[in-house]
Image 1 (spheres, one colour):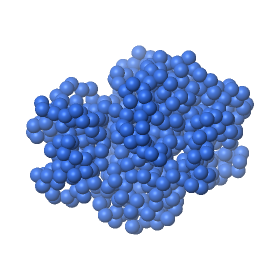
Image 2 (cartoon, rainbow, N blue to C red; image 1 turned 30 degrees about the vertical axis):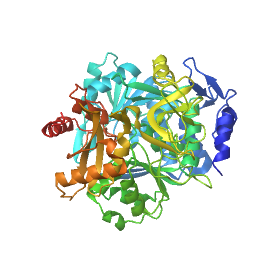
Image 3 (cartoon, rainbow, N blue to C red; image 1 turned 90 degrees about the horizontal axis):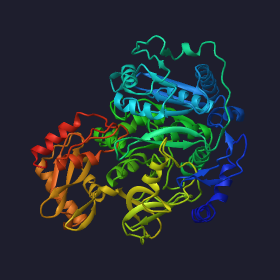
Length: 629
C-alpha cells in the first residue's frame, strides 16, 4: 500500500476512513454515529457503539482459537521469575478477579486506582476493571504518597489495587506503607485496598480495610464482560500539568480500540501470533497502549518485563529477552539504548544471542540522536524507526507504516511522516501555516483521529484551555519543529526548549544532536542560561561513556568546535560541563525544565515523576562549582 492515497483519504473524508477501520473490531452493537463534537470542542468517535475492551483483548482471542497461544511472557530478572500465560489462562484469571471486584461493589462507571509494579497481576487488574466497565487509573509504582493522594482525590476510587513491594535493581521497595500514607493524606477514602503479596516482602494488612489479593477471589463467580458505550471512559492516566496539578487524561473505549488495532497492524507491522515487546511500564501510556491493550487486542504474544536495561544482571538483558522469546518488533526509549551503550560501547554482549527474529525497532519519548541511531542500527542490522506521540494521543502521530508494502524510509533527525488521521501543520505565533523548512508550533488540524483523549477527568474546560484554545481549529501539541518538502516531521523539542541568543532563536535539540555525536559522550542535555550580553547562551551537560578518560578541557574544546562547525558561531556554545548523571523521569525523559530553573537560580518543585531526587542537589552543586548558578 502506498502512503499518499490513504493519508489523503483520511483527511478528505475522516468519518468514512475511520468507519472502515471500525469494521476491523468486534462490536456488540456497531456504532450508528461515527463522530460527534463534544461541548469543549474535541472529537468523540463511535459514541453510541457498544463493546468491551477486555472482551476484545481476551474472550475474542479465545473464541478465534488462540486460547493456547501465549498472551503474556512475564520476565522478571530482578525477581528471577518467568511465566508464560496463555490467552485462556489470562481470560480465566481476569474473569475471576473481576468477580472479586464485583463482589466488593465495583461496577460500571466506578473508578479503581492501580499502584503496582510490573507483575502480571497489574495487567489482570486493568483488564478486570475493563471487563466490568469500571474506569482504572494506573499510577506509576514508586510515586510519593503526596502525589498518589492527589490522584486519589481526583479519581475518587472505590478501591485501590497494590502489591507488597516493587523492585529497583537489587533494592526492594515497600509499596503498602506508601499507599497507607497516601490514603491518610487524601480527602477521599477508598473503601478497601487489595494487596498482592510478593514472596520477597509481606505487607501488614489492616483489618477491615485491606484484603489479600488471592483470598478475595475465593469462592467468587467469574464475571462476564459488561457492554459499554464507545464514548464511555476506559481509563484515566495522569500526566504532568503546567500548574503542578496533574491532568487526568481520559481515554474512551471505542476510539481507543479502533486506534490500537490500526496502529498495531499498520504502524508496527504486527500480525496475530507475532511476538511484541513494549519495553516500558504500565504506569505510562506506552504500557497501556502497547504492553496490555494493543498487543492483546491484536492477538500477539506480549513481553511483560520487570527490570532495567542494565544491571539486571548486565547490559545484555534486552538482547537475552529478544532471543529467548523470539521478539519480532519492539518499542523502547532511546535513553535505554544509551544506557546499554554506555555500559557496553562495542555491543559485545549482543553477539552472544540470536537476534534473527527481530524485524525492526521503534523508538520514541526522547530525541533519537544520530550517534545512538548509528550504533543501534549497526549493531542489530535492522531498521530503527523513530516516531512521535504523546500521552494525550495514546498512539503514534508520526511514523513509517511498517504494515504497508511501501513504508516511508527513515530519515535521520525526523520522526517520519504523519500517520493517516493526523493533519499536522506548523504554525507561527499568529496561527498562520508556515512553509516547509520554517520552524514553529506543531499542531494538528481538527478533527483528531480516534483514540486521542478528548477530555480531562473532572475538568473538561481545562482540556479546552490546554490544547484547543491557543490555535482555534487545531490541537496544540506543545512541541516545536518543522516539516520538509516531502512532509517529514522534525521535532526540535518543546516550544520552551528554544533559546534566544542575540536575537537568534536556536533549538537546543539541534545542539544536543551535535554534542551527542562525540565518541566520548553517552548522553547530554543542552540548556540556555542567562547572559548579560546575549540574553541567553547554551551550556552542555555531558555524561561520558563508561571507560572514557578524556579530560574535561579537551572535551569542552572539541564540543565547542563541533557546534561551531555544525550549528554556527552564532550559537555561542562555549561551555560543556561533565556530570555523572542527568535528572530523569522514571520513563527516561531528561528533566530539562528543572535544569533550566537550577541554572537560573529559580525555586523549583521536585517533579513527582523524577527517578532519583538526590540528583538535583548533586547537579546543583556541580553547576555552582562551574559558576553556572
